[in-house]
Amino acid sequence: MRLSDEQYEFIKGEVVALFERYDVRCIPISGFELAYKMGITLIPYSSLTARQQEAVMRISTDGFYMEDRYGNDIIYYNDDVSYKRMNMTILHEIGHCVLDHRGESEEEEAEANFFAKYAAAPPPLIHRIKPERSEDIANFFCISYTAAVYAYGYYQKWLAHGGENYTEYETRLLLLFKPA
Image 1: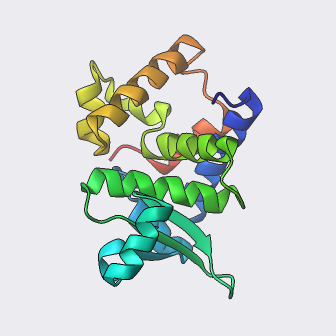
Image 2: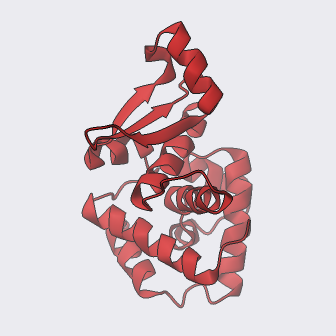
């Protein structure tokens, strides 16, 4: 599903504001670290009983976000997959939390997918490494090759639409991740 340009811009701004609020300054971006800083409880599927694991796998084979009856944010995630997949799942679920999603609509899933993609490898940070191919992005940002292919394609579109004519939030993002 394609979101509106306004939705994409809003989500990008939310990612940068989140990084600022929680002082995220290291690449690769860790969903685990961000969840910890946000006070989100992370629960790996493997910590659950066999019966509970069956139940959560019926909800999602990757993971899901919920708010408990006390208002605490919780992300359950499948820890029987690669670190890269777990990290993207957690970033996706953080997206649901930050964007205040309450349902499971196609639009909310598209927003959370974009949130995770942008959080994991924002084009202004990709631009700093001057990638020649998707593998460069995969290695630098510690994301899967598939995610890197999408990130590289998005980076190419970003370049074609002005690239280095940074928006206000992109300038703020670059200030967070100053080169050493």
